[in-house]
Length: 609
Image 1 (tube, rainbow, N blue to C red):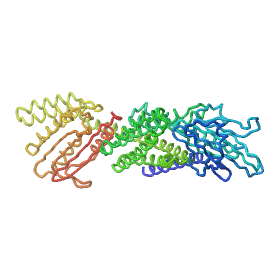
Image 2: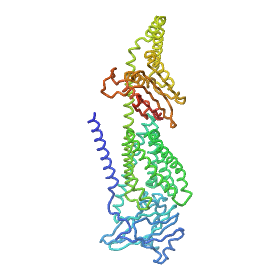
Image 3: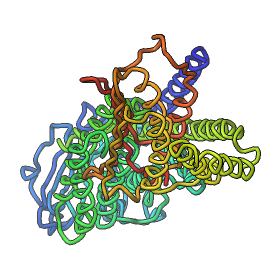
Image 4: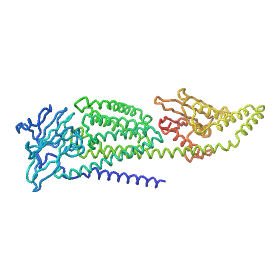
């Protein structure tokens, strides 16, 4: 079995490595020859137009000194809905004319106009592009703000652009001397995005079908997280303009910011549910709750971007996203230390996301052109969603295995009872007859027979696949212990404490009986004079029910000689039933001051009700 587990891990690692290499090859194998302006082959000058009031003829009449040379690789900006004019001079030192493409590499501007000298009477040709322009009206169809520009051999070409955006211009101009390089980039980028969104769509369909069958709450939160990430990337990557449909900043930015905040909200809900954070780290769970509420408030807040002319809410969403991911990674580390299954897988998934989101967030918040960080974000996000989906599938497979193990344990327990179930009516009648014969001669013996008949009736007639209140479980245990009381006499004492707020707590019948039987058997064998037994049940503030079975005596280590033999089957069946009924539980054994205590903490899991 160990070799089988190692082979599974090797196969999974190989699959993930193949996915990383495939995604990387597609997303980063972009066409070469895209120098970022300014370069030796181009110079730029800018003319701010904060009120967006200058006309083409006015700009043409302005003296050269009003143009400001642009010598950095950062964004060309105008803030708060203004405009900016850019004069680009392209040089072609080669003996062949260049038929290239001048483009905004990040397609985030609403309107971009270009004037280029030509042989017409006016002397200048005019083109328009941008997010708000329908695809067929653009010089180059698609979402890219791009223009064909020709530069004669061993000559220069000067073009003038005017860019205007509702929130502010953030131009990242690039020049492809050969148009085919630009179209190769477009093709490769389109393929990368098709692969990315194809992965998300396949995971949505697969996990949607899985959720419709299982209805686990954490899977539902994961689906909402996956869908909100897909929506965020759809708007963030300007997919509507990609298909030639105009959608400007007034819709793209608010929808992208709102879906980003929604994804963080569902991430918190998924992480808390999946890791059982409330049970293992209540304080951290409360911090996560607050962050989830903050992201929930940011969703409608981001939609108010349309009524302002700045993007401050987008920065709030960015900072909240960083804090949210940090807390959820801390939650994963805490769960790992607490022994939560699949916590390592959870951390691996978010490690993949961090590889993409950290460079993107740093560049975006620092107003540095995003460049390849956009591909890193897609790659990290795609791997995260793939890993989370694999993690959930593996987890549900293990849950199904535990369920079958619990069913098998229940069958074994019922087989043990079959010895007494050959003819229940005959057994009851026989015990009642014995009771009638014995009672006149020995009242204690008669009472023992009567209680034994009552206990057999409870165990043989009750369904084992349903749940009953904890109060009934305690009544059953009390019936069993009454028989032991008669057998032990004065050498046995029992104390039962059942808090009122735990009486209706549901659990499978006879779940606690193996613990009580062991307490009587091993406690009686190791207690020096008398056996004292305590049963307690209480509820904590977070809803967790704490059950304790304590007995005098000492703990028997594995392999230690015992006065009564033990096969361990009863305790193993108990563990299997416990895992199936309460996935979020802890079971502790303690031996101190002459007492052995078994403490069971049961946290109801909504996804397994």
